[in-house]
Image (cartoon, rainbow, N blue to C red):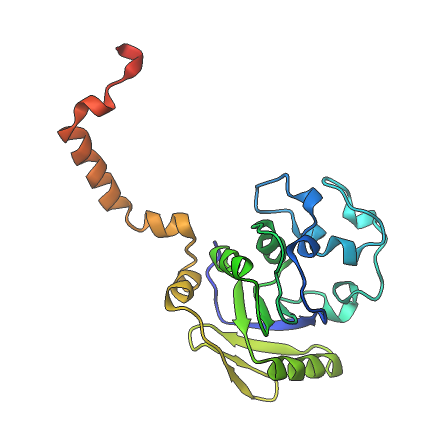
Length: 217
């Protein structure tokens, strides 16, 4: 998992409430568990005019011209601005995989669905909850100013607007540390690798019959 560093990211506004995980990454793309390659199918039903399928050459597909991620001013965005209850619907880790693979490191919204919230942090995606009126203000500023960027400082838990306004947010300390160190569940476990190996060696020595090679029995 990538370490989260302070970023100054271009913001793309998705002005739509209750965006569910099937809209983020449609069900037909869930066959793969590689964690990569899902970015081209992020918001597939909204981005393209035709129906998508796994393994398709998306570079040749017709785009929906007025969809935000297809507009030139938002190319390269790493901060997604969204509305309430983002990530609702079925549980699927493919949703944060697709967002991260597309290039997003941060999603800002008034609220998130619980399961998506947990999955996002475990996959290196920072979710920031801000008051609805603050999110409304950000939508107005983004739409009025091409090239609008936000300075996202996870260490200090604050977002700084181009005008210098500081928007504070809160993150669970454990989740924050995992993002800063780039640790997923496996990485957290491997921090104790030496202790695990020591335990395994002692356990093998104390109970050798548990480790007998059954092929030789």
